[in-house]
Length: 119
Image 1 (cartoon, rainbow, N blue to C red):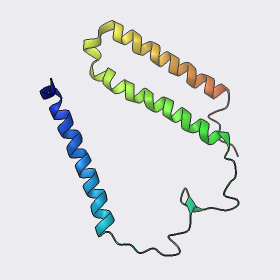
Image 2 (cartoon, one colour; image 1 turned 90 degrees about the vertical axis):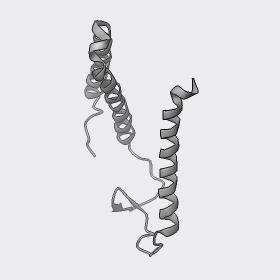
Image 3 (tube, one colour; image 1 turned 90 degrees about the horizontal axis):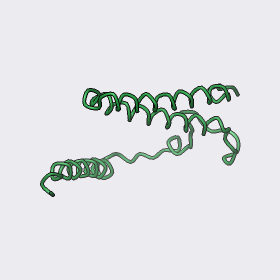
């Protein structure tokens, strides 16, 4: 049974080795020119202003959650599309129900104003 999973473990091992090697080499060999300008904190490419402990708007969190929900949809659609012919009508109906649930979720979020970005 191990021989069936050996290629997967080999790929994970090589990927881990490459990632750790690249991280280690850049840490050891990379330049370390810390300047005062590089040490300034910034957020989204612009300098921060005001207090550092302000509460963010719920719109940020709502946008992130909606992104995750619809990103997961895309993750499920790719394998389904690649196995579309083997799954038959049952697979089609199940994916159709999944997409209907996500569509209802999108309409609900839209009606609640979750997709409006106003300051």
